[in-house]
Amino acid sequence: MKKLAFFALSLFVILSLISCGSKKPAEDTTEPTPPAVEETIEETVEETIDDAVSSAGNEAALAVMDSARQAALDSGADEYYMFKDLEDLYAKIKEKAENGEDVTEDCAELTKKYKALEAYANAQALKAKIDQHEVPALVQAAYDKGSADLDAYELLAQEDESSGDALLEKAASAYASFKTVFATVAKEVAKDARDEALEAKKDADSVKAGVSQKKEYNRAVEIFKKGDASYSMMGFEAAYDHYQEAYSIFMNLYGDIYDKRAAALAAIEAAKKSVEESAAIAEEADLEAPLTGNVDGIEDEDAVLLEEDDYANPEDAEAYLDEDISIGGDAK
Image (cartoon, rainbow, N blue to C red):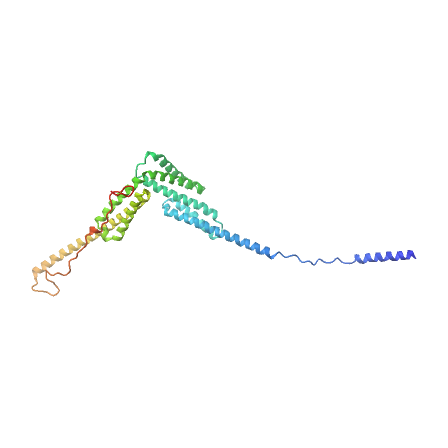
């Protein structure tokens, strides 16, 4: 009996194991987790910010470069061959920016080169003023250094690989040297410019510029007075610039009015000749067929047709300017 029960139990266990082994494993129906919406938005925002920062960086860099370029133009740098080379680089950078490329580093480099050329042009302008006078021994070394730095800048400018820093260093050094020299000779330079402007004013007065072109004449006088104000405050470089500008205006007035007066005189001479010829013809006609009595359309010889003009004295239009000036504004 016990054996029978044991056999039955063993059979039940075996059948149970067979039944379990025949079942298929459950399929994994878990769906993959999609990326978080927050992560996608964050990536898009980061890309947009990067593009905006790049665009803003280009705009700022281009603005600084354009400002440096304009300053170079204002200094007269476009008179030098180096300016054309920089303009070629400028056009390439503009094209790259329009294509969406990052040009911040290119702009920074070209900005330095424009600033260097501006300093070079300013240094050359000062040197030209200084060269009109004898350089004092006290500043001869500074003059020599400035000249050497100008030569060094020109050599660097001929090399494509020259950096903006190197160019700027030489040009700025040259400008600083010539400013030192000019500070010593500036008083004499400004005084000579003042004398030249006064002589130009006398020429303008000789053709009555204060009457015929009063507005421009008065503008020159005011600029001259600004020069005196700067001179009296020891602003000799500014004074020089004012005197030079006044000189140019006075000379232009003189030349313009002189030419017009010459043309007018030529016209008057031609008219006088024509009148003389007409008078000769009239005299001949009068001898052949003289008029008698009054004739309609011909006034009496003593008739007054127009009232006599009363012109103001042209000399009253001439502005008075002191011949001499001293520091502190005490003109002599």
